[in-house]
Length: 512
Image 1 (cartoon, rainbow, N blue to C red):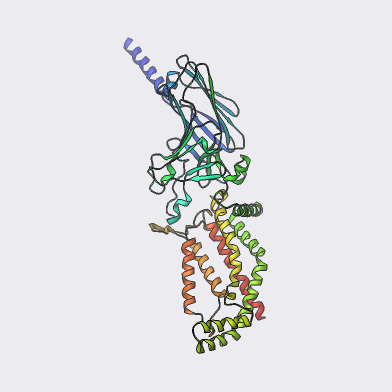
Image 2 (cartoon, rainbow, N blue to C red):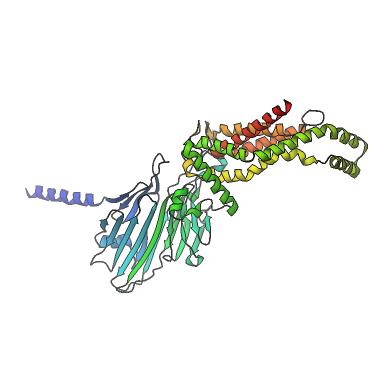
């Protein structure tokens, strides 16, 4: 009987120990965030971003991949050690607050960690309150974010693969700057003398930052456990040192931070006064152009509710805006073509009779006589040239617009990536592992558009050199656009079609 009791007590004891070995989590959930804490060490287990544009939540912080927490040494021992000595953390949860207390007679200090969350927001307030029961001179505490913010490599996209998936430091002094580490041995340091406002990690669509104020001494960006063969920057980590090196007896020390961990949408960033994050790498005038086009595109989509069609409508609106310039350019082209019947025979005769400088001067005199220029043939391209700043703006806009991340159109699964019309089964250098159809269509429309806008030689046959130039230009456009986001390629294709249609309609009207 005694042996049975011993066995039962042993089973109960080891059962309790086994259950205590598990980490129980405390949670906060809103329409924007779902956050889980590990109650054994008061660290974040999961920071899930919720958004109606996402088919599933995105975890900025994920257990075993990336985390955010207080680390360091007090009196030569880790915080986890002191938590064990003190019997663990006490948890108090209110509606929008989560408070962790580490307090015990066995500890030489007390630590209170407070989280405050906001409904319908990606913001949170975090504070640490230390109370020292005795003088402690050995204090080295820091916050760590990383490795990464759970961004994964986008494979099979060829030469531009790293533009679709990356993680880098983003920080604000007098302006917003970024830093991407390309080598696992590189280290980038910031200190409080840099007049830093905030710092954090960001990816193409997501952002996790801390508004540090004066509650840090140094920030170090480094690569942590880099094993990604495509982009080691995905393992970037931030180590943020707190400016506390010692505790005086019976003194309180407070460090507080404002956090943002969510999407890089215009509305979310504006709500948290982080709108200067948007398109921060551009010149001011270009950035305002991008923001203006973004407003128009958002307005169109609020009625159309389809981003692909909205991009097509945007191309039509741009065409309407530049119509007066296009009309004038086409008229100049027609006038120049008529002059060719008069000018070209005279130029041919000059070439037969004269050489060198005299030949060039006489040809120029012919053009001056008819108040025209050899460069007049380029005027039809003026309308396309005006679209270049718009195209550059769209490149940034459509390449970074969060809502396009999972926006589909026709066979395109994501307007934020190449259209991936057909899987090639293997990865080819430069091109990746997909055949993208839309760049082919765009290149063909571009070829036709440029070809019909060009001038034929005086015998009515297209110059061989011109054919070669057009072919090389088409190949160049194809290679340039091949790995671009399909939303950008869709816009440029539609712009070509509209330009081609207008030109053909103008020619037909003139013939009638």
